[in-house]
Image (tube, rainbow, N blue to C red):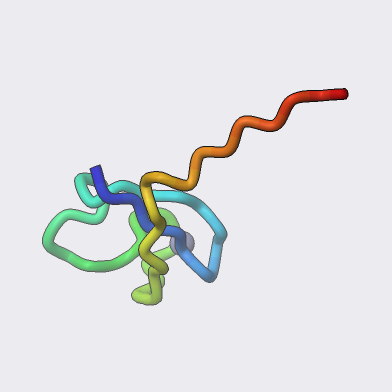
Length: 46
Ligand SMILES: [Zn+2]
């Protein structure tokens, strides 16, 4: 699932939520940044 981050309200929305309208479902902003799905970092506490 591709995820996008709205630069206006900073919410992460999936392509499903955006749908065919191509805008943020929360604030209606049309500027969304595509997020990489594989940037999962595991950081261990020392
Ligand atoms: Zn938004």
